[in-house]
Length: 325
Image (cartoon, rainbow, N blue to C red; front, top):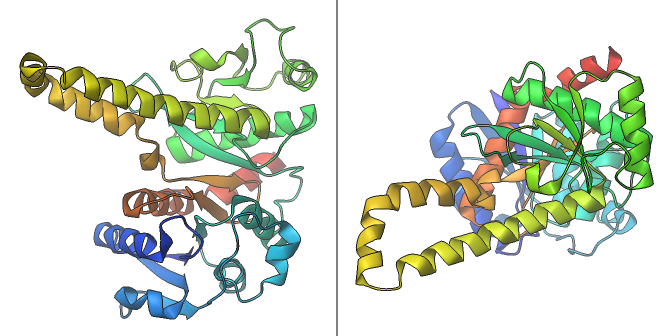
């Protein structure tokens, strides 16, 4: 029986969206227990279904690490502390990204030997069913070459543990495929990976090819990765807008839609960033999942699916073992 703890406060859509997401998830999974942390009066729908811990304070979206650490009665801090004290399998929040990542790192500690934690998320590849693991997508503003090398190691282990890829192809995200292209940190990381004969390292990859299916793992600093993430989400929305407009032009295009609606639905589901659910803070001593700040019920249900899958795959212990080797 997996045990998850959820911070129900701090999201753009309020606790009601989180509650609905929890209920939908529990209809799918019967082998899981959820502890919901937040304002008790807003969690009445979960009574008798989940354990509820009353924590009335909400961490502001712009809260820094020190501010969060002083908010002892906030839903975020109580959720993280509950996970740590009770050795629960995962913690999930769609609250302040900076606050959640900082508080998780300080309370749960880093896996021994890890220099920096990284946010990692799977992106859909052109090959149906394939996921491209990209990290860091926003935990850090900048990273050293040595940290990028360690991200490659953790990303490779993540791909093996979660997606069952035996020998992942690993690339560095750069502005050209040539070895001499990229920021100074990328060029140095390239040399370090090459000299170490890093398993599966294939060199640089451009952003336009990152989701082509060549790569299983794409490594970048947190600033670049966050831009890639948000640009991808924006393009997906724009493509959906264009497709919708194309079929609304006239009667004939509307009739044409009837013949291809299955394919359009599949494309929409593939490109819907909400289905990704959330990103794991890789390198921390526990499964920490950051859900989208604007999560609706569906997106948060998907975040719970992510946490469940990562806990079930025992990804933290597999990364510990891989780093020791």
